[in-house]
Image (cartoon, rainbow, N blue to C red; front, side, top):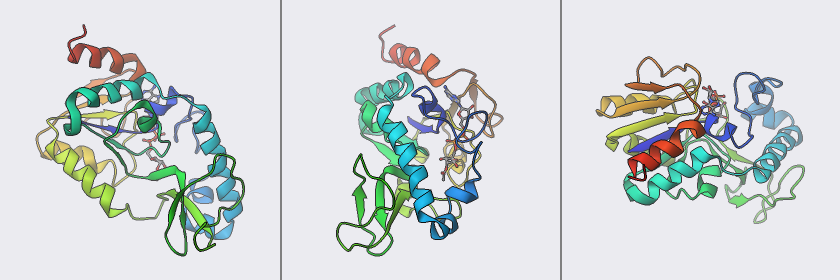
Length: 229
Ligand code: OAD
């Protein structure tokens, strides 16, 4: 079994999703903030947006949905992978260990000159510079127009291919190639289940749709699956 998650699972932690009312993209154009061109044009502005989001995440707690998936991994072990599009690290903070981060991490910077990846200090402000070579660093995330890094993508395809059950939780399934993992799982014969209060790009091709928030269904479903009633 594996789970493919998006920003909806962090909505119950108080982190806005990307699309829809109150979403991250509502007041901003993605091209203004989450592209290599935006960063080249105004790195300070892009860094400020990421610092703001990072502080929001630091003040948040994992949601009941995050915790339920961590509980599932404790029982299923390494056969259970969380493949996430989220960059907030909340799956790991809930206790999940086997996590594939497709879009990188908001908690990390990556040097644009030597490639060194570093944890961003909690109180960081402004443009971050590499502690090794002094070069300007960028947020350690994948932006629009950038290729997915090969290592997490390979791990995600592998997990989606061997899953007998593939949960699709809290994602609009509108951003590719990530959303293509649902098709990988389907082609490999997985039973696919969507957990989302709203219809998505995946709703008409999954086997089962649960129209509810992650926190409304996952804790009880996991308890039941694990024999806790
Ligand atoms: P979206 O904002 O596109 O979708 C969020 C989904 O979460 C929607 O389908 C909501 O209905 C659903 N949702 C809201 N509350 C929920 C809850 N309590 N439980 C379950 N689902 C809930 O966010 P993503 O699909 O994550 O990429 O977006 C995918 C990618 O687009 C992101 O990784 C990011 C963004 O641009 C990059 O930055 C590269």
